[in-house]
Amino acid sequence: MFDFVRKTFISLAAALAIGGAAQVDAATFGGTGWSGTNPTCNVTGSFANNSSNIDVLAGASFNSTFANGDAAGNLCFNFTNTSATSAVVTLAVATVNQFENLWGFIGGVQLYSEQSTPTLLWTVAQGVFDTEAFSFLMAAGSTIFFDWSYGQAYAAGGALPQINFSVVASPVPLPAGGLLLIAALGGLAALRRRKSV
Image (cartoon, rainbow, N blue to C red; front, top):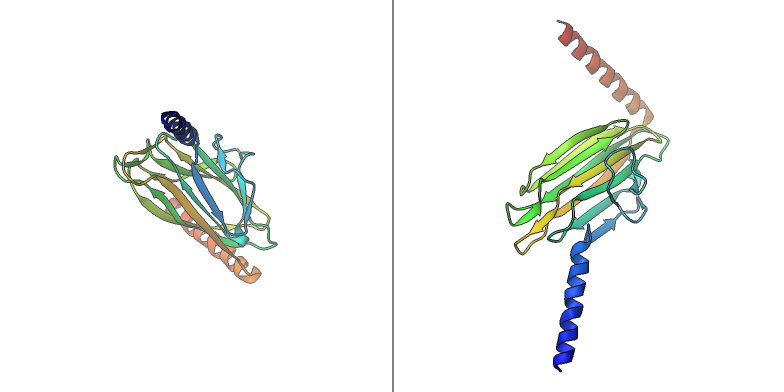
């Protein structure tokens, strides 16, 4: 009996040690826009090869839960508009779930976007719970790279830190796309005029 208990304890300890070493302990994917299997990467920017691809018009959602001691890293995603028209894309309900010194990411979380050079979109400080939404226009056939950079996970309380988001998009009808372009150019012209005054 003692030998059975000892073996069970050793097996549980080994399972816990292996589980604690994983970078993303639990990740769930939803929607039909996914291809690729592992969104975890260690490369910031430059369209990382080991990222997951999302067809924005098909929609997608990502939910990840981290355990205490999970290593710092990056979650990398390529958002692609596969349609023949522009699309308005919303990175909706982007959430970093932390709570003070009980659960979170050491150094917090940063979200970068890249078309040609990395751009910092959002910073969430260590221990802070925050949620945000980002909307942007994507040209037909274009791809934008998104990189969630996070610090080492900690969890002293009952909950665990999380990074979650969903993607929704709708195609822009061609006449509306033209109006959007004209409005944007007009706004740029007005801004230049204000700066020169």
